[in-house]
Amino acid sequence: MNPNSFRIRDSRYVRAAETIDAGMPGTPAGRAVLAVTAAGIGFVLSILVPQLLGGVLLALIALDMRRHVDRWSLEYECSRREDRLRAGRGTEAF
Image (cartoon, one colour):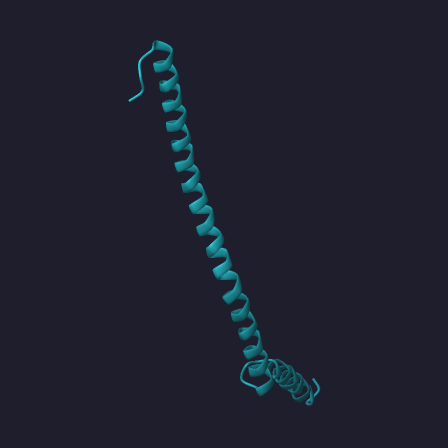
């Protein structure tokens, strides 16, 4: 066994660890990347989340209004038919 093999292997581990540490948030470059990424995600979410919530709220309001409009149109149709029946019988509408 080569006596320098441990030293070579250890130096590879040290280089790998240095490479990994270069992109970690503990370094200034890593912190900057993390800050820019977090700011970008925060900006996108601050725009998208209200838009999505507004869309959901608008859809709920539209569904509720459709239900009311359907009921009102049925009531109008019913009263119109009642008026026609009364007119056909010769009685006056109230």
